[in-house]
Image: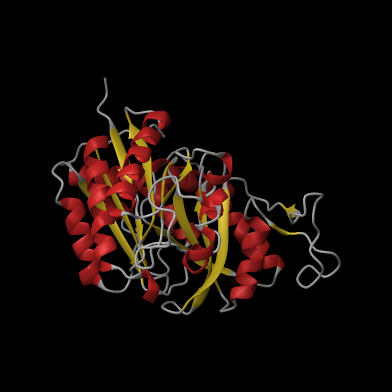
Length: 361
């Protein structure tokens, strides 16, 4: 029987103060058996994505300690950033890596959520595969209105937290805890500073699409269904969430994407589709960046895809496939792309003395 291994990717609402971030990651690493893989802070988003792996019990304990430390150090009433958020620990997803099913992972997520709610008195919503009801599967639904809207929303019966008090926690906000498949956070850089143009492209491609309007697609009257809900025009990419934003640190607008199932929409397909849609709006893609880690299979598939587009043989070493993927998508535009630091199997192998983990690509 293979060893059970799960990944946790909490997003903390602090991306500027490295002393605070370090205290949170120290709390995570204080649990014996946990392997910290990646810490990815963003100044403009004011958010840090942390990735660690271990056995389920170890990961749940480490996640709890990280959430607890974040609640002690981060005051959400003073937080501002480009990324949607509702809590000091905004989201805390568990991801099955090996030897464990999604159903088992969801049970661990619910146990973690229960402990956060009861011991830390932080309202918690369970999302994706850990959700107790369909409307809470989508993270965007749980986080609608963000921190600023939480005070009014949390007291409504239909949005009572799954765990913790149905009261506004001004300091810590609320946290979403879930179980999901491997998610790739992928930002695509544009040759514009316009958030409006970036959002227009994001709405073109994201699965949810945009609100349907009469006449003018921007200012026209919103079309509603019989229930009074806005009618949506779906985007072109399935299993993709996306928004547009301006990153002052880089001086460019980006399409910020979550690829929630890369077997449905791989990284390279998302990149090419954004290139196409951007060009239709007179905007050029200049490069991209991966936030956190990416599976080896995603990089190899991308390398093969771009070689085939050039009518070249894809029968080359993995290192060459990765190099082609990096150059084709401009993954090194904003900084060096080090495969040992960005590819999850390489990172785990490096942390564990060279034993490559089979992710079942």
